Length: 420
Ligand SMILES: O=C(O)C1=C[C@@H](OP(=O)(O)O)[C@@H](O)[C@H](O)C1
Ligand SMILES: C=C(OP(=O)(O)O)C(=O)O
Image (cartoon, rainbow, N blue to C red; front, side, top):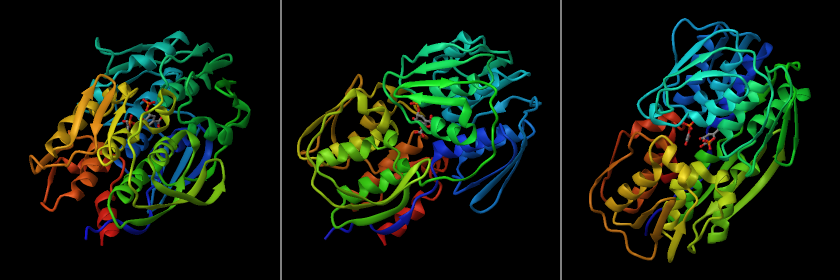
């Protein structure tokens, strides 16, 4: 009998919220403390950037302590954004409005990702930003006094939205941002804590009032639903599974995967819910058989980082799923559409590439073609492939699997614990 995943797990802190807690804490005069901070490569990139601008940040086992004057100093060399799209784009907003110039550089993957989507709206506020000719890093930012603007977002992106909000906090008049499709709203919720007078939100309209008081906070980061997602999927598709994931963030703008999985027939219960600035709950998951599914464009932002896992679910469903509206996946740490197709085909999964997603026939048996898979140095791909590889008796290697350190350094230990 095939064994599944079983037991109780506390997944690490949320990556998006950890980044924002450093950025907003550094903008306050005084001490901010952060419990359950995600100690991962991407979040440490954000810490290092602020240290390079004179902010005192200490880290111990599960707490980060920020002591800031509320003002940043000019860094003495280019700021290294590593692999982190969130750090880069949010910092572009913040740095555009500083009284000094900066340069941002990143690793090979980040240096391919589009930055004009952030540079252009910021330029409308008066920012001076030079990207490479391809619209990528390295980026040069000449600090300026910005003005407010009214902006309707062409792409649903929390990173672009947050960059504009951070720039707007230092502009000389108000800014209004309209989101056609809601994306994760952590910046809005956290800004309401750190600077209640600076933000009003009515449905998809966000209004920012600049130069309001920023108040340091003591906050606890919820468990990352995007990390919990690997176990939610593993427990669903591996027979004889039953897990409980404790204190996971269940912000509705992040719940797309769970909603789609329930439509597919998954057995997921949300219990012990508590409502703080970010709602949290325990998530209980048992094995289930799945129906094929289709996506509505509007639900995609709430599951964008979980799309590789959705492809895996479709590959276990009892029919053909056409997963579309996923073209944003081509601009992540790898082209996640091309890479998922290539690596799933190595496991004999019946998957076809579409311009904006995948067509997957889960009713066809999987047949391993190669016992060496490739993460393409993309953390979410590495973890998705590791869960998929649990279906085979043979040992399967995953190239550059240590890239899980970007968002989930304890992933392999947690897998061992749930499989034992
Ligand atoms: O704002 C954030 O913290 C994030 C927003 C999303 O990116 P986009 O804004 O490009 O959709 C997501 O993919 C990323 O992992 C984290
Ligand atoms: C896309 C991701 O992150 P980022 O954009 O911050 O690199 C991710 O974590 O899947």
